[in-house]
Length: 411
Image 1 (cartoon, rainbow, N blue to C red):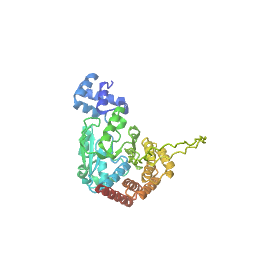
Image 2 (image 1 turned 120 degrees about the vertical axis):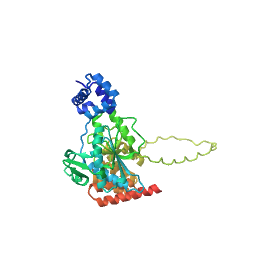
Image 3 (image 1 turned 90 degrees about the horizontal axis):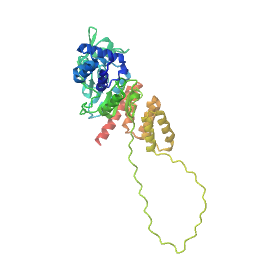
Image 4 (image 1 turned 135 degrees about the vertical axis):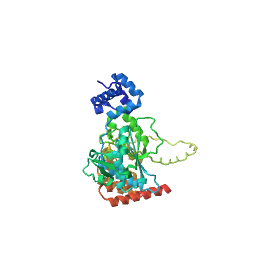
């Protein structure tokens, strides 16, 4: 038996590529629901799906992959916690906003909340929203009751801090549950409410791998709309190459944390006024003789590109994920240019994207030597310090970045 028209409904509604989970799995799901409804004809069942949202939801429950566990890829949560702590330290700033879409049974958004609480943030300093298309998964998430299968890491010490045991189940404490807001939503819905404030971080892990190319583009568009211009997008391990936009790695802590590509906007240099044209001169009564002598051709010296051109060219290469080419371009032209904090910061970002934390740190320090108020360099140094375990220095950099941002906001 084939899914037939049911396949089309799943493609249109949740963007599912049947091949991503196997056609046999889709067929089993369709057969299960056809048996449950007593419908024996595939076309009649497809008609039912298009006209009965409740039945459509039931089929979705049969085919979705809701596999998750707490602190899946722990370094991702540590990276996001560092960002949240830095942002929360800015005086007068609104709470840090984080979205998990999809959220399965709540393991991911609750992991975010626990990581932020462990990092010292108060519940009033952050907001975690979580959406999913599975109503059953959302119901399980809101109950906050988990089996041992949800705890798969070597270090499960967080379970002792945030859960209480009830038989073989671990029940999440109310203080954590209260920090996450769950809601039903479909990322492919063009009517997805757009009145919510943008997010500092959007988790969208292990969704794109199950979608058709058209659905992937649609989800990427939705994420771009939901994310702040300087926000962070967190994907699954295999998903960064799927994106079509100009995303680049957000830091060396995880190759799966991305931010929007480098867009450098420089003020146009002031136009040099043209010299005044001389007025007409009276012609001499006797024109002097003119002797044309051949001149040897003079070699044209190559014109070194300007700082703006180097930054633009390197940024374009970085946005194409050609980080090594971008770095070589910067290194080649740096000796010909005046010292520039913008160039050193870009080189630091490129070294960081290539996994060279030491050279990245050196470039960020040079950035600050030339511009002590460069808050992005301070933030980058805070993240690097945290990654190597120097929490005291990381906090120093975070406080400096917060002071710079506050000073600029008040000026």
